[in-house]
Length: 203
Image 1 (cartoon, one colour):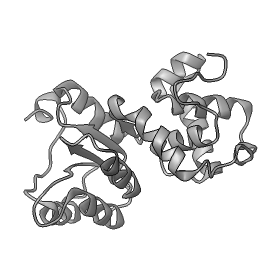
Image 2 (cartoon, one colour):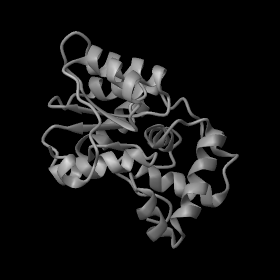
Image 3 (cartoon, one colour):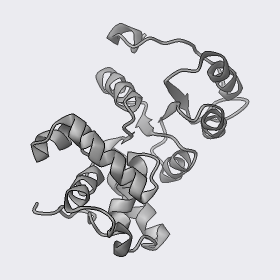
Image 4 (spheres, one colour):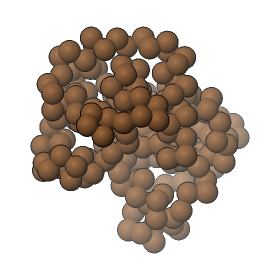
């Protein structure tokens, strides 16, 4: 009801993870909303199967549980977004549209904690030298992605067109072997390009 009322076509619904996988096979949607906790098959396993079945599909996980381990597992499963169920209707619709364009998102309340802990657990495995192939502009774009800026916000911040920003983002993903923005955020922190609680570039 929330999505339909905001002009987003809902092509199918499922009562559990098994039904969700079957629905994706049949309907091939652009974006899938999955609950973490479902009967028969939980949302994390459903996400893994859906993305193996339809790699171009984007998955957003919805949960009432603001727990790090679910966030880690969702990102590891290939999810492009993670939202808590208390998200506003407008934010939910915006999230579906954003992820549908190829962006990734995380609920603001958990993003910083996620990247800080994930980077710490990885032990800073991505050395700063791993960014040497990026141009100064690409480093600037990656740093701002690490702060959670969308393409539109990047364009405004850097006084560039969104098309140019998308080109920079695509090149960054290709050079660093990244799947989406969620991974880009982690790399930005792991390499020290963005520091927890700190600034970016000339901030």
